[in-house]
Amino acid sequence: MRTLVRVLLYDVVLAIIHIIIDANLIYSYFNAGDTWWAAATITAVCLPGLLELLTYTFSFLNGDLSGVKEYVFWGVFFGPVLFPFSLVAWHVYQVYKGEKHFKIYHNVARSRVLTSLSSLTKSALQITLQTTIIMITWSKDTLPSHIYQMASVSFSLLTLAKSCADHHYFEVSGKDITAHTPHGQKIKRLLFNLVQILIRGFIIALLGGYLQFFILLFIFIMVIVNYITAIIIIKSDGSKHIWTAFSAVLLPTCFASRDTFKNKDPSFGKKMFAKFYRYNSVFFFFVFGVIALITSNFIIRYTDMSTFTCDNLPFLSYDATCETHNSFPNQIFDLPAPHSWFYFLGNLLVVFLALLHVVLVFMEEVCIRDFSKVIAV
Image (cartoon, rainbow, N blue to C red):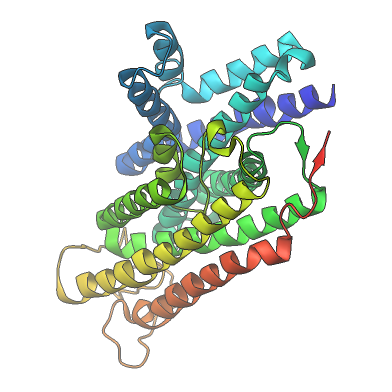
């Protein structure tokens, strides 16, 4: 009964609340005439279903599915448009069938993988997207106008941190549904996840405010780097690497098939994932903390590729001709306006936080003491 209550609360009730928040956020953008923000938010909401469609298309073409019926069910009904609703409906059906039915391995595994996919893609993208919008519009809009944005970010942050902690222990255990991790370890990993998500989310959002659409280029580069890294380190199905490539942009995480852990030492998953996390953090530092930062400085200083108006000026920039409140109204160290504070404080923050993130990833296995004790139940 306790399992069904958890599923009903976390995978049904909270999921419905999340859908309502996102729907109201999208409506508020359309209502305010912010069509681009609305379109970007819709893209974030549709991302898990898009990846599910790509994954099952890959598997179908590779001959890994039983037939067209399986492809239509998981690739279409859990596709870009219907994924959020289908995920809730699927969990409602599992609750209706009872706890014994839900605890069948393929049902538990399916639930954890789909929930993780939703959090690691949609929630991750929502955090960076809505944070970027808040940074750009904070000085121009009143606090109440940011309610839905902050609610979406907060809800996505907590959902992502918890889901990633659960996903990590499920994956590194070889997808063993009988493995139990002490709550102390889960809480410590959840806290580490929160800090790392905040760090990466802030860096991507800050750089996105200045790079504008060019930030998508660096996200794409990170996706490609993640995919190549997964191929080298995570010996699994190609479809799992697609999920890993997108999911590991905002937080070090990865997916692997159950066959990857067959006949392997119990510590195999932990070591493999820890290795991927470390490489992922280092690559994030170079892609965003070095290359993207240098590019953003060059673009806003020497080109007109990024255009700024009073409507999209980031919070570390100030233009005296704009009738907006700003916490950084004066130039610093005679650095060129209007982005002088970004050249100084923005650059320091990005480099410092990116380095801090690498240190945290290398420290977390020691601090958390992952799988020092695993209990079969």
